[in-house]
Amino acid sequence: MPTPQPYMDVQQLCKRIGSRVLFHDVTFTINEREHVGLIAKNGMGKSTLLSILAGAEGYDSGRIILRNNLSIGYLPQTPTFDNSLTALQAVAGDTKNIDRPEQLELRASRLLTQLKVTDTSQLVGTMSGGQVKRVALAKVLASEPNLLILDEPTNHLDLEMIEWLENYLSRTTMSIFMVTHDRYFLDRICSSIIEIEDNRIYNYRGNYSYYLQKRQERIENLSAEIERANNLYRTELEWMRRMPQARGHKARYREEAFYELEKIARQRINERNVRLEMGGTYIGSKIFIANDVNKAFDEKVILQNFNYTFSRYEKLGIVGNNGTGKSTFIKTLLGTEPIDSGYYDIGQTIRFGYYSQEGLTFRDNQKVIDAVRDIAEYVDMGGGQRLSASQFLQHFLFTPEEQHNYISKLSGGERRRLYLCTVLMRQPNFLILDEPTNDLDIVTLQILEEYLQDYRGCLIIVSHDRYFMDKVVDHILVFHGNGDIQDFPGNYSQYREWRNLQPKPTDITTAAKPKQDRTLRNANRQRRLSFKERREMEQLETDIERLEAEKHDIEQTLSNGTTNVEQIVSMSKRLALLNDELEEKSMRWLELSEIQ
Image 1 (cartoon, rainbow, N blue to C red):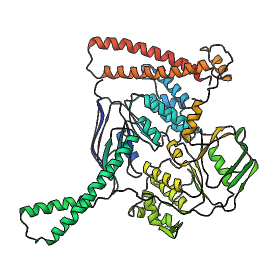
Image 2: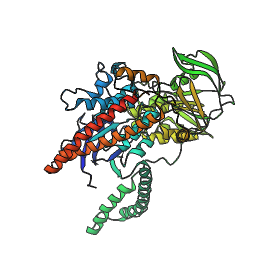
Image 3: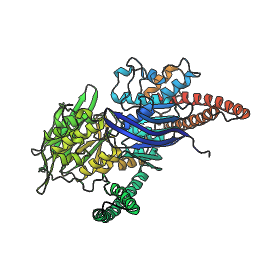
């Protein structure tokens, strides 16, 4: 197999915003077909770095060297479109100057359907944030670039879409450079990890699990090095104090070595050796009981005769596709959304703490420490111990210097981290977290996981982060839609294993083979795919991915300028056959997709 060629070489890249240095001396390479994940704390400039690499903004110094004719596809965290475009127009774009525009439109339609954007004529301006994110994903994937740059691609996607995207990207031949907080997603797609910590770059040639292992080894080795340096430093410091000022050549050499040793000895490892264990606030035996609760919006049923008794110290996860009513259920429990019938019986000792996607409100002219001190000067840890507001913020990665920054200077992820601190500072005995992992970095997620594992209270988490849910919850409620709610006694991975073992439903009714006529295809919507058709559709998806990968390889080979005339003729013939086969299979896939 030929050695992968470098696609992008980043050399000593630096970026400042005002007086703040986001990063400097960032150096790494992305190779052909390589899938790379970037890990760094919030505020380190991850999104800015991706935007720079995509050519969307400038930088202060350094170099970015691209392979000739390299095509780049960029998915920002918050994509935007012309609101007057339809979903299909937003993905396919202007096809007037494209050799085979029908190919791009077919690919765009197929991707939109796979991403559950069923009405491709819907205007982007009427779509939700999650729908716009899926349209943006379809657009960047349909363009089939050499290099995909993805900024939090799983944000606002439900579990079904995350798993689809995970499977799609794990098979692609495109190079990938991405930032994501979803650690299962990172683990299953990326073969390399780049970490930015303390303005230094660390490269790990493996997936996320490998990175965790090697990072721990690096920290342990550094700790041992610092310990040895400290021991030697004490000896050398005594020598420096005793030596006269007039030193010979050897003494001066030893003095220079002393200052180098001092730098090592004074290094600090930003690792938290102590878990934050907070004393629980009293909570009675009665938490809440749901009695025949019903909630609907017109014809859309959210809760139907819902009954549930919540246990003391229960840690419950809620999962389900977007639009199935997860957040609405939370709001009915909190009393911010009225129910249609039934009632909740909530214990008198319950004190809710609620983290929501809409709850982020701060004054930009306020300092970080003041936003927390407005709630409390100290946090009671139990057992007579307490933390100051500053100490509590430090545990959630706000250094004493950063605590005196104005909130206006915080990144989106840092604001989310501060919001989380303000919820936890109030010491509720029943925490409700609605999508807490969006925009938080992996280091913060690890801290939050530890906090919730030790939390002495009740907990409900709504999240699409499978890794996070597996670490924290005891069991899950699965919202299937139309008021169908399943109680599963286990975490998400266990539910997924159980679900995959269930027999697939089959349609035993026979139906005529669908034809090209759109009227007949629309009629097919009245039935579901048969077992045979479902298998055919799965095989088509596999075939299309394989054919597109082969087509991409041939196009790459033809464009590199090293092929002879005989190879060019042979590959050109194969490319024509590939295009025909792709068109045929894509048309058949679209027929089947309209039956679902």
